[in-house]
Image 1: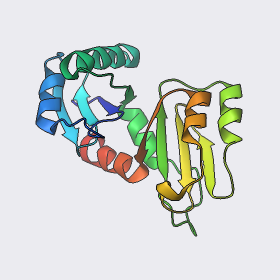
Image 2 (image 1 turned 90 degrees about the vertical axis):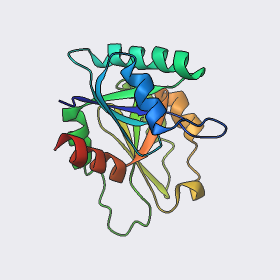
Image 3 (image 1 turned 135 degrees about the vertical axis):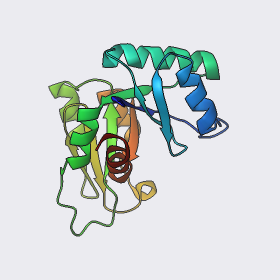
Length: 176
């Protein structure tokens, strides 16, 4: 049974290229079961057994570093968490031409970190938190947004971003 999803940061960007088959094989070699990939952007679903999110994160980050030769920030979510994310409605999307983005975080941010990140929102970028995610609704293409993502990560720590559509598709395909 698929119990976890892992969202990997920085896969197939720049000079880094790995096929889904090679990624799946590398993760299976770490002892995880029923490993499946979704798209070529570092989305995995698998059976991690009864391991905690923290132990799965460490296992994948160390194992992928050894296999690939570079750091791969890994963000683990349980089946329940993926389903909750897919159902989340942090904003009224009517009238927006942008796509809702989900920035996954390693751990819940402090109140201070939340305030610092939310202070960066502007008229063109809406932000809202859930427990370990930051929802971002730009008013157009991400590339046209003035949002300072480096400052966001200074406030809340490392992130990896997926569209809500990707989260919904993973939830429907693997966890429904």
